[in-house]
Image (cartoon, rainbow, N blue to C red; front, side):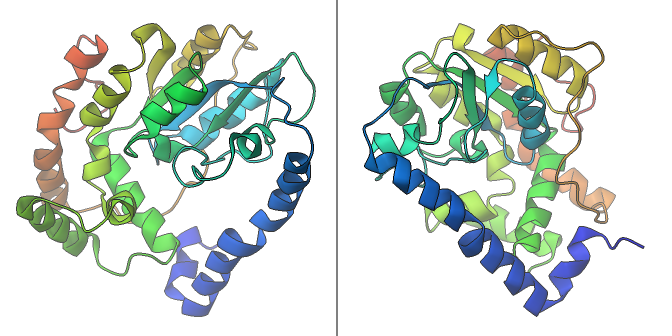
Length: 285
């Protein structure tokens, strides 16, 4: 029988081994290829035409993988390049070296942390002033729960979900996170408040360059992305569900507490995005 992925997180040696592989071993071959390309003349023939900027745990992997299989789309050496948030001190030649291959393709990358990392909108606009942006949003409570289990899976989180939510609410009441890294890693509720992050992007990017889709509406979201990018979509194609984790759902009381903490932000989205109402599948209304 296949064990649920999170079963490994109860075993500290296995958890440590997975973190070492993900953080240190797996990136090495890719980084060597990028270093060799960067050593030569800078080639900007392949400039990203679109960025899938988030949200984290909102179906971005499945959506990106579906887009990457379409004719005319080029995939970089890594789905998440993280140039504009984590690797910003590297030269732009390092970034463009990821888009290596045939010319005449529509290239794109997907780094979900771009959505709500400070200063990323300004950096993207400066380097890629014409790039198209795609945002996938998920029911805020479901995204926060999935984010928590993602942190558990990576070995960052050792609290119960109840304790993590209570700590975050106390921290928010006090007024600040200790660091941006802590907010990105442990801001389960904070990163489910989409309105503020989207407003920061829309200060610099016009609505016709930014498409917002809903993770729960997978098939129609892919169709809208294909139209937005000018791509032909095979009939019946839909993104698959990726990185699915198996975990117990929060209690009704905890879910209600999380929804209450997120509803005010969620109610700002229709006016911000031109929606008639929030998606019916969301539980924060």
